[in-house]
Image 1 (cartoon, rainbow, N blue to C red):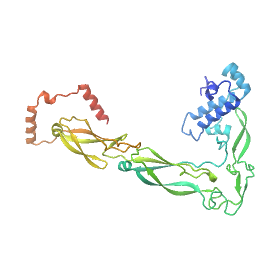
Image 2 (cartoon, helix red, strand yellow):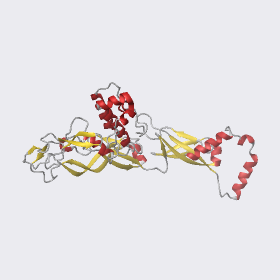
Image 3 (spheres, rainbow, N blue to C red):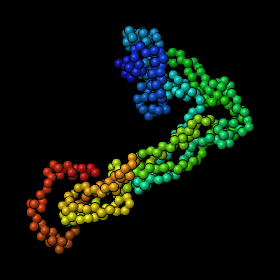
Length: 377
């Protein structure tokens, strides 16, 4: 939000000039949901965006200020003494709470909080990623306390209405802000939004209804999964408070590098060393694959960096259908440490070579481009 040229508040909230007060309020709450500090904790622009939305809301929600802006714009507001200042808030969380209160929700309910998600990272080899299958993962989670069955009370003892919020699960208070007094609604700090409290809290979980446990889950890994992809297991995250739905489990897959292959999509790329004489004559060689080896034909006259293909020897496709291919990059090996007899043979060969033997179908620039691509790979 610029201090010198603030944006049109109607544009900021995305409402027309004839928008009703209810339209303005809905638009602001929609923006606030997108800019919630829990969602934008790592966005350096989130606080500025929320300040801009808050300023626009303060202008359009007040009939007098709105009329002044409609007639005279931001200059009219400044000359009339309206100069919003949000710098006294320490963070976007503090600013958000000034409007909606600590623990505010947008679903129209102030009840028990949903369970949080759990993220677990697992490592596997490229061969394991190719095969897929079942995988056991272990992690710590917040689960329902079995002693009190999640209600926070010692078995056989009553649960009564919270006297702090009179069973509403939320409390209201008037707070002063830089833009006037506001009514703040927040979760009850006694019952945490449940509206009830146990008279005798559970001795196992101290009345919370939840405990930290170690859990093991069997996850299905699809064949062909790639490094960095996630598997979502619905409802297997942290348990929600007092019967609220549980979060999800996310398994982040890390595929260890394989010294034989580089993966590109569903294709695998490998290098094959071919002695220069064999590349000249042509030869059939074995190349490594995920399930053993496969023959590849090196045509006579194959040049350095040429790519040969072996169909169906890559990774399985997550979308189903045909497997990827194995791409074989030919690395021509020039013989070294020759014996006298070998030198004599090569010398005799060199004496017989003609321009036709050495002529290339590629231009100099094509050769340079291919060499640069080979180096980049």
